[in-house]
Image 1: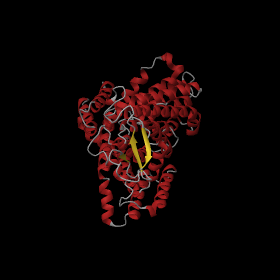
Image 2: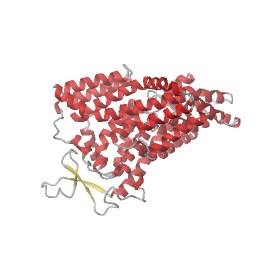
Image 3: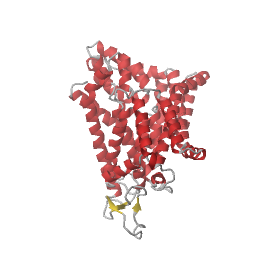
Image 4: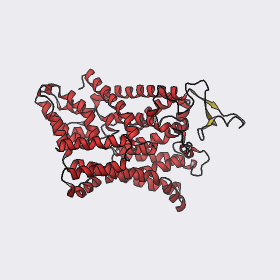
Amino acid sequence: MLTILGFAMIATFLVLIMLKKMSPIAALVLIPALFCVAVGQGAKLGDYVIDGVGNLAPTAAMLMFAIVYFGVMIDVGLFDPIVRGILRFCKADPMRIVVGTAVLAAIVSLDGDGSTTFMITVSAMYPLYKRLKMSLVVMTGVAATANGVMNTLPWGGPTARAATALKLDAGDIFVPMIPALGIGLVAVLLLAVVLGRRERKRLGMLTLDEALATGTAAEPETVLVGAGGGDRVRRNSGGAGTGAGTGAGGDAAEHPAADEDTDEDEGFKGLDPDRATLRPRLYWFNAGLTIALLTAMIMELMPIPVLFLLGAALALTVNFPHMPDQRARIAAHADNVLNVSGMVFAAAVFTGVLSGTGMVEHMADWLVGAIPDGMGPHMAIVTGILSIPLTYFMSNDGFYFGVVPVLAEAGAAHGVSPLEIARASLVGQPLHMSSPLVPAVYVLVGMAKVEFGDHTRFTVKWAALTSLVVLCAGLLFGII
């Protein structure tokens, strides 16, 4: 019964948010509360929620101060050169912009933290997507999938969990997987090319020209404020489309975030080259502080929430020494902080009930028990396939510490090495990074101003395909 109710709870949540019948926060709170009562454990709901909040509180604190920190870095102009460099590289071509998104997300993912990756990627790319009226779900989908492939780094989490659960060396798990993960990154880049071509076809070909010396021709053109060097973007009249409303192949439903709205320039206010918050004289201090912060995080010198708390306090104090300016910067980013932290604490209700009622354990046991005995010699393949849905429907902790040891034990009885099981268990990470149980995904959709349901509907199929590519590459190279 708990198995059925567990799957029903997850399915109900996904259906309601994808159909936009409930907001993610309301769904994350009310649906598990209802199912908790349905399993006859309503009296323990409070305990489950408190346990869930306690487990996610450090993550919420990290996100709150990380948003403030990177928000201040955006305000003072740390990422302006990145945006200008990407714009020059992309030449206002939607395909290059989508590929640039994948490359940027993959590079920044080297720090091992999804939230940081999404904050930096969205900070740099959101203005381009917004001004060119490109689909924001394309940005979130590509960024999440690229980060999912890179999430397998030994310091990213899943590899360390697999090594701990099976008492293996993380290097022995990860290093042989590099060729398969490289193929996965290539698949993400090819996906970016395909989606970018669709965006190019939908919007029309774009060109990047130097701004005219006179302002008389600026009226019909789309000017990129702060893009650097007086650059401006102009749409060719001979393109395949002229605006966000025209779709390629009738796929406008997949581009809900590309619709025109009244605040279309909102994303570019932060890149105004004359904004009062710029601190050019402190650029190298801010760059050094950010590098030091990321280095300390990778080296695990302190807990990540503490690092971002100290970093945010230092960034505010040095860049804005006057109290009114500090309050203004905190207030400017309060909306993002509230949305993301609220989503994390709401997710704590979902994960608390899912774990506290025993639904996760029953779901895992049922899935493992459903594996035919004849599949024993192929348990590594089974593990890779199961990792795709299981890491989406449960946390990495639940999967790696609850399911993977059982699969490894079943495989060992048929001569399958625990190392193969551990490597196969990493396959589902590209899809995992879009799971509603991953706090970082709320940073991604929150900063990109994308509905979580839209992101899920668009991304799941591509991320699952990427996971299958990694699995096939692992089999081809004899790694799994």
